[in-house]
Length: 438
Image (cartoon, rainbow, N blue to C red; front, side, top):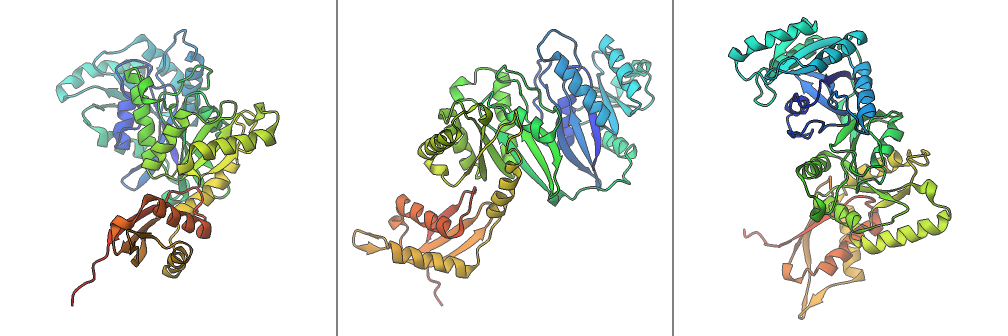
């Protein structure tokens, strides 16, 4: 198990900015509105050959919002599971009454604590930050997460406070799975059910999850990172900054993932939003699993499964290769099937054909359906697989103008008929063949 570092503090003191600075890319949503982060968000950090997991948390706040109780419970859990707590305070604003409450809570946990006085942009400003010693912590450091000031010193301090006698997992043992879908289809409930822990706040208000958050899960076979994301909406429905940033965060999470799980609601079927998300996954060349959630609410399951599959194949012909899993995050029905499917899909995504296997496919293509246009025949001169993740093939032909999109699709279908390539997109490129002159 990797050591865990929890980032704790009240709202709007710069926790997510600090988290992003550690990660080196934009993982947490940063916005001037307080309370932007609602969930715990994990990310594995490598610093000078030392690995640990940093956890961004929601801002400690006491208000009447429907999420307040859940947020405080999430923060408590993050503290309880951590090896080191980074208590972040606002160096420009000074000590706040809530800071004393948080300090008391952290002291009761008896964890190692580093008091991080943020927003100290210059050495001259450090004088104003000494008042934070009143909170009762001796290990104090001045930083500016926004400008990167003293971040390396803070990382060194974290490593000094972690016991590295524990066994660490190798990075190549981890498979990252991003969970995507429109709002309120049960993405967060699915992550919670798989991790056996309330990591994402679940509420019946659409859009509860604002940020993409990662959860580490260990099975007998390997470790996984499940990335819960904000629900993606159609472009015309993104009306404000927060929703735009949520969509942006989801897009980053998809880029960073090995596999995407597209979650749909069994009671709603496949709509325009699912089609748009699927197109986004195709554009980003990601392997895909379709998870139909809330299956426990369906009575005539055989008929419903047949109807949903037909509807999916009809509306998403471009993703006919994706497997469908019918699950229930509420009851836990078949959720482990996602891991089984992920192993198959990632193996196919990483697959590299031998040249002899590709030779067979091209011969089969020419036998089954040679292509002639304007009295001219398409001829394959050279062909090879140049990459995997996703499988990418280059065909050198006598005339690229003869390569009609329907024939390209026919070749792809021949590849899939012979080698499956389940759950993974294929890239087929065609170029003009030039014979080298001696």
